[in-house]
Image (cartoon, rainbow, N blue to C red; front, side, top):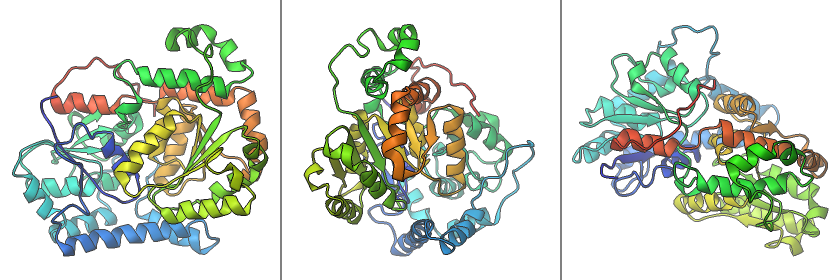
Length: 440
């Protein structure tokens, strides 16, 4: 790979950075965090910090009765995604977008753009503000935005989209169509898919995904209901080794907490309901606290209080990490030996493309409602039922072959090679990849 790019992100939640780390081998040097890079002016750092703290505080309030939904609803109103139908011109700017440009005119992003302009590389951002600033302050190279959800608000598109030179790497077909409604010129849109980590894919032929999925389906279909029905197609795609080898790992459920830490109590509910099976080592549970040690400590205390101390580090694995790069890389490794991912429908919805079924916690925010709809459209995930009875319904879904079906559908229908397609555009390489369908 000859031509590299500036890969720019922000550490607000996990989604934008997770997308950036899918592109880490494309980055010239390290991935740049626009709101905390070395040398950022203190005044600008404070602007970003205030924005991040408001989002995270309101997100953590959301589960609270009355006040939580009211506070989050007010914030979500300004970043809501309008109904797609009927198709119409949605290019008019919004109050939120005008406010974003006011902060840019007041200097947000100027220092970073001037710093990166010294080396004319493609500017690839997984958040819209750095890209807007790059265009506003005359960045000399090409500017790209990587979208991180299955649908996007008007805030992702500049004030005057028809005149803008910003190009988009769209995470799915719905985003392609949405960008057109917002006024983005068609030649500035590339349908790539979300940039999943290459370490979990295995090149154009997805050799790693196929190996992991072959093992996963064995755990998700213990009675062979799904595999017997689709033996030929599974063997043709995954190889004759399907379920013919010794299990590589026990049945494993991974519960992932979002960057704001909301919904972490759901992890405790899962432990409580699965207590008997965990003590018998009938399945393993990973509780992913991200970079929040306080949540990991809370999970550990809850496990002990529930009488699960003996299961810690045996059938219960609680993970937290000191920094985000370590978290993203370790989380990707954890998923490879996981059979089920339980999380809110965030950017992790696209990880269905790795052949892992997703149980969806309640969505937080307009974009997650659309991620949920997309996951259901590709039939790769399903909303959770009452977590108090997960010890019953989870195993009904497994014994019926239902979760194996979700795993297969995710592998077949969801985009897997987003990072490779983005490479093709940036570097001019011509890696042979299947054309993505416009699943909207």
